[in-house]
Image 1 (cartoon, chains in turn cyan, yellow):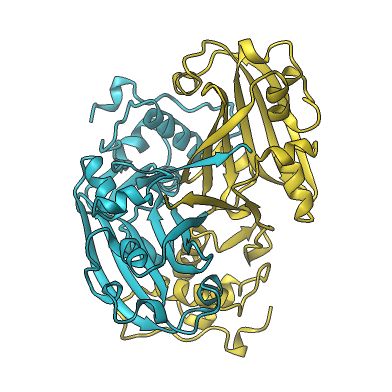
Image 2 (cartoon, rainbow over the protein chains, first blue to last red):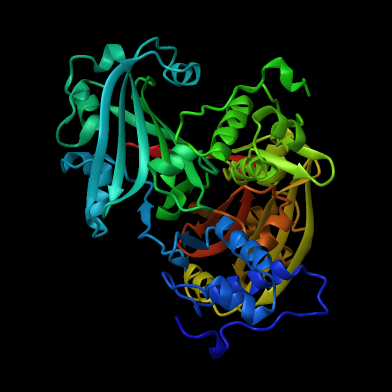
Length: 262
Length: 262
C-alpha cells in the first residue's frame, strides 16, 4: 500500500454538515471506486487514519464499519482491513438448460464453469426422502413425499451456490435420480429418459441478506447479499417435475434472461 | 409488545461456545422468523434484554446490530427497535413487456401496479441529452450521444425503483420519446410507431448492497440489498434501441422468468 502522504485521501470538510465518520467513509469509498485502492489492497491502518484525519478511533471504526456493511472491504483479524477481492463472476445464460447442453452429457454447472475456464466442484451431497414444506408441496402440484438432493457448488475452491432439488418421490424413487451420481447430463437428462420430456422452467428471483448459517455455507463476506432463486421444471404434460431452491453468492453471479416483446 | 415474562425469549446456553451476543441474536431472529414478534412489533428494550439475559448493554447492542445488518429489524431513533415491516411485493412477470400490454395504452409499471391493487406513482423525471458511459455506448452498438430518461417509481408512496433509460439520440430526438410524458403505452409503444418493432429484451440481474445515495433514493432500511437490472431492447432488425438501467429495492420485488427447455 502506498503511504498516505501520497495524497490518496483528501481532507475533511469542516464546513460540511455531513458527520465526520460519513465523510471518512465517503473518501475511502471513492478511493476504492476509482481504483486508487485496488482489490486486495490493505487500507491505511486505524492509527494512520486517526493521524490523517485527526479523528477519534471510534469515528474511524464507524467509517470502516459502513464500508464493511456495503461489502466494499473485509477485516482480517490481526491483519487489517482490505478491499474485498471480487471472485470471477459466473454468468447464467437463459439457454443454460437447453437440451443440447444435456445431450453433451454435462450438467449445466459443469458445462458452464469449464467454458468460463473455472474449476467446478460439487460437495456436501445428501440425497434423501422427505416430507416437503407446504410451499414446495404446492409448487410440485400437491405431492406428499419428495426426494431431495442437497449440494453445494464451488468454483476454483470457493463456494458460490447451495441448492436443494425436490422431486416427486413416485417419480424419482428407485431411479438413477436417487443415486449420488445420476449420470451424464444430470437429473434433467434422467427425467427425460423416464418419459418426462421437459417443456420449460419457471424461475423466481429474490435478493436479501443471508442468515448466519447461509453466510457460513457460502463463506460470504459482510455486506454480500444472496440471490434466492426458485426454479420449477415442467414436462410437456404441464406437470411440475422438479423444484430447485438455490441460494447464490450475489458477488459471484450475473443472471441473464431473454424476454419476448410479443 | 407482550412482556418478556411471557416466555417469548429463552435463556442463554452457558455451555455453548457460541458468543453471547450471537446467542441473543439467534433467539431474537428465531422469535421473528416464527412470528412471535410480528412485522412492526417493537422488540424488548435494551434495558429489558440486559435484565432478561444478564448481559452487558454492549453485548445486547451487538446482537441488535447483527439483526439490523440482516435487514430483520430497524432502529427508530428514540423509539426503539422494530421488526421491519415488509412492503407489498411487486412480481415482475416474464410477459411484462408483451405488446398486448402496450396496446392497452399503459406502461408496464402502471398496468402491473394497478392489477396488484397498489397506487403507482412516478417522480423525479429528468429527460436530457448526454454522452453515454463506455458501457452504455457499447450496449447500444457504439452510439456517441443518447437521450436519457431518469425517474423514480413509487408504490403506495414508497420508492421501489430508480431507472435510467438510454436511447440513441438520432432515434429519440424530436420525437414524443423526448417529451416528459411520452404518451399511452410509454416509450416502447412510441419506438414501435417510429418503425422500430420490438423483437425481444435481454435482462441482466445482479444483487449488491446499495451505496449511501442509492439507499437514500430508495429509502432502504439497513440490511436491504438492491437488485440491479440492466435491460436492452432490440428491434426486429437486431438493433439495440434502448438500455434501461434499473435499481430496485430487493424487499419489494420478485422477478419471474420463463426459460426454454429446448
